[in-house]
Length: 423
Image (cartoon, rainbow, N blue to C red; front, side, top):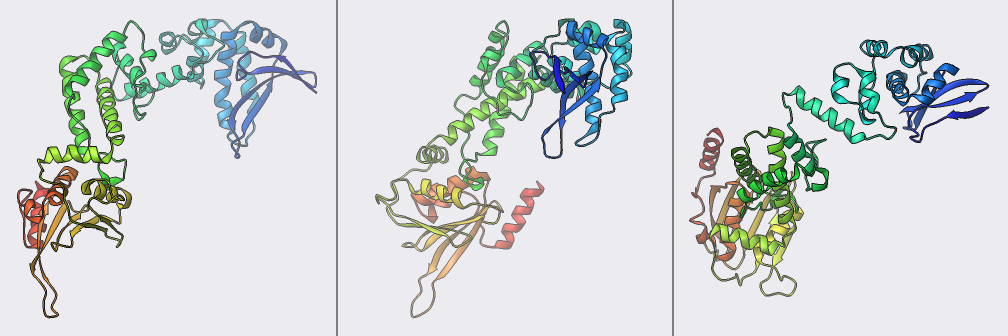
């Protein structure tokens, strides 16, 4: 027969039950092999029950000391009841200074006490009894997470000031630096929010007019890493110059916020607008292409673009990069654009940062095949590829002369690549 004798509103805090006439403390901790929560119990006395009922601080201290024993039990082991019982008198019935001394010798769950409002300064100084005077029955898990995050920062030599912490809270990265940043002004102390907004304004002014383009080589939603690195470096330098006391973590989270928002804007931009911006940067112009183009990948899959066709309302460049975004993969990194009417095309080698342009040197006749001229050039990232594709679509292979140094020998291309990589 089991009856609940005492429990708190927070159901996670250990309760007292009476089982077969004996008092026992019961708590949930850990999980079994099937990931179901485990429950542990051990005997207590009437004097222990009286303290648990009247003194929240000591109740929480006992909980934090028992939890490591539950961890030791693992997924199927038994709780060491003797060790748990041995904690009762020293924690519940001893003088505060003796409790402090005990916590210098045993393992205990500091995060549990922090979540329930323990004073961090007193806790760090070993005054656990005094630290728990401000304890609350409600739990704030984020407070414990923030403490652990700051401890990890301290281990690598980073100590956050009040403004640093406020900036990290504003971006939602106080607990974990890998969290996608966002703007959360309500998470910041109102007294510090104006200072946070001044830092954000510095970053926004620094990257005004900058953009992060898409990189279809890595998928339809991927963005250009070089653009992101440039924006991050620009914001980083501006924020450090205007606000020199800020810690590295605070500066990085502001840069991350600016880049993340710019990348999201790029992903939500229609491909036509994205291509138009790329064309402007590349300086291409001229009339829209009026001839049919064929796109193929390294797997033999193809797509045709027909000008002024209701099924192909987008520009040729937009249609091609959409094709790349759909088809590009680690084992599919060669894409070709061909103008069959002119007998010329370009082949993009994403795996090697290079391109080949192919033109007809001699038309075939009398049963003979045409002869083609193949020339190669290195390409500088997705921006270089965009410029080449745009130039070819708006013109022809001759329009590529201004985009790189063209080599007729593949071996020379390899030597050029080695020189680039070595440099």
